[in-house]
Length: 240
Image (cartoon, rainbow, N blue to C red; front, top):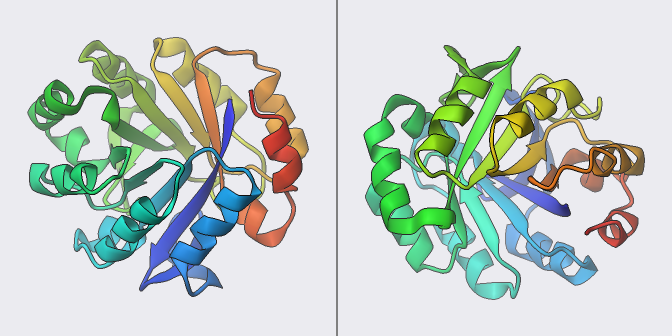
């Protein structure tokens, strides 16, 4: 399991949302590229970059910044937030992004996901952002009637290799991961799963490692590393 710093971008700045609510924003930096370099220099093996403007509106306001991060860093990055067309996904992947992350689009359109998997395979990831076990959509503004486990099972059956599981009720709260929800997703199949939401400290990282699950690929952390409740250098030492 690797530790994956998150860089959430809104209006060109590094921010975090509380429980995915766009009216509860905390700014942590004015230069996402510089922030990305900092995490790389400290030992990150991978970065998770989100265009929050894209997630909310579908507009590619932070596209140039994300591409610059991909070109500047030596480590790979994945990016999501408002990626809802083949053109946009292809553009990012050709620009040096390692993986693109889909959310709302593939919940609505299975054919689209199948086509993307046929072309890009393991460079496609799906974010299962859940509230009370059900998938949230459109920048977390809506909750669907689709269970996260059911969707994971369907997508893995289609050939999906990468899933990001986020409990949005915990995201940005420092309340600890939803271990029960995570275990349910891990039990669905053999896709690589990245845990996201609620991580506060080294104890949370250790708890995830103690699951000893081969398909727990990584853990995304955001607010904890920006506010210093998680010692990122020590967390990187635990990577395996």
